[in-house]
Length: 209
Ligand code: NI
Image 1: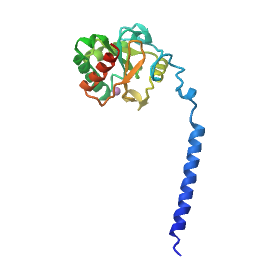
Image 2 (image 1 turned 180 degrees about the vertical axis):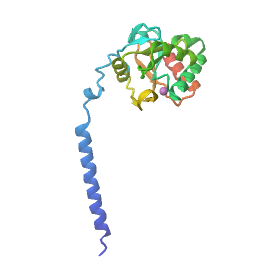
Image 3 (image 1 turned 90 degrees about the horizontal axis):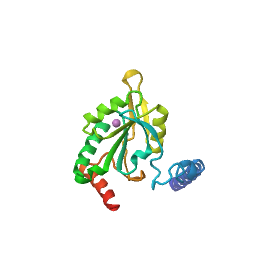
Image 4 (image 1 turned 180 degrees about the horizontal axis):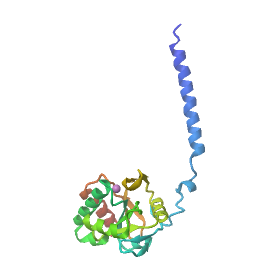
């Protein structure tokens, strides 16, 4: 007798059991809505659970909080001044996108929050943003705990890589457009060209005017 069909059915049963087991495990271990932040408990008004309160120090040494988002459209972006690629590329693209907004550029601000407070002092941020062609951008730093809280609020991942003075940082490339109430409006993905970024921002502004 040909035993192949029998072996195939046994394998199918084993596979089905494994899938059922995995599904049970995932369900059992998935955080509830509240734990996962889906309920929005940490954000009072945002449509997506991105953003929230923070207290940080700007490039002029002033203590600021999330109210600096009020009254303007803001692209919030996390990075660090020693970043070799993602951050310079993003800031360059945002500078170009802002120029393409023409008269509406005055309604947009860029907020760059460092995830490397060890090296990124207010003075370092100020020099960096000027060199990146965005001297009017707001650079924010703080204590490691303050940076951690801000990164968590914006769902940003970052991690130190390496030891000594040669370390670098991994970080999410996400940039977020926040509306003039300081609420999340839409993502401005890293891969977009300056004109695509400008279009995303223009669309968001137009939908509300
Ligand atoms: Ni970077």
